[in-house]
Length: 465
Image 1 (cartoon, rainbow, N blue to C red):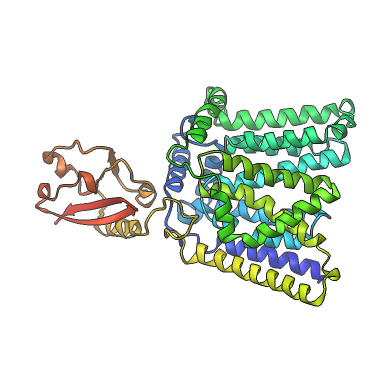
Image 2: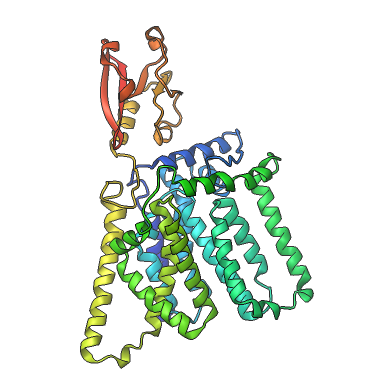
């Protein structure tokens, strides 16, 4: 077997193991619980309608629903789609076979990046969004390089998926538009008239996928209008911060803490991209820089948005590594360079392992944002011991996600405020009450125990003695 084949197999195996192994280690986040809810409704026959006010696009919910149908409902099936998108992201450089970087180095950096690994094991839209962002830029680059539009259908499909994932697709499209302006002379040399059939096919593909997903497979005719209306509330939320406002340097500090070695190498990549005028390297540079600047300017910041910066940063770092002329270094400089690479690799692997398999949800993990406390698993285990076939559960709290996932298959009712009379307690065998609503004097004949949902939020489990 050729050396290259062995390297590819090793990278694939490591990507699969690192992304798919022990997916139940980390307690679910609030957003993962919400995503479960929508996917469960789809497979339960309640359908799905895109809500432009609060939630992202429909694609990820349908993918989750498919995973539930194949594997059943579990932590694994909830997170497997994100893991598969994450594996695909690692394999992109191997598939592309670009000359701008060593494809094995590029895949390795995508593999061991702490942020990319963390959010490949996290059931939200972001890792899929990053994957299709890179595919979009790749397709556009091929159009510019070849001066033909054979990759336009791939561009159209990627763009449709991006819009069906998140409203931030407008940022990625803006970056591609900027690349188009920079490369306007190349675009003018493309003979669009001879390729009208590809243009038609691409427009059809984009429109079909977009309409199919936003109308929930043609069951929600208002989905198209809602998809357009969705940009305004998300723009307002981004500008206002909506409780998630952070300083401009927020993402820089995260990269500095966990991925400084890749960041430093990416600066070399930026230099060599500019020096070589290579279209692909320049487009990746543009994606990295504009994502970094735009996401840093927007007040609304969450750690998972970091991977929009990290992924192109890894590719740029690979560009930098390929072009650094190590042979021209003297012995001392070579030693320092290899020491930097060694320390950087160990550092990346250490944090990738500890953040994903040891400190998966704790506060010191900067990727575990407003995360659920693992104590909620203890609550769910206690409920499972108490719960009988005909039991009824009442949750009185305005915050409870991801509890619905851990209680799936059980008879559960929800109240956001405490507006239940004592005489109605008998209707419920188990109650879970937010601490601010709980008064022990009202439950003299009940057992109760407190569990932490997340920092600052306690839930009281109440059941009959």
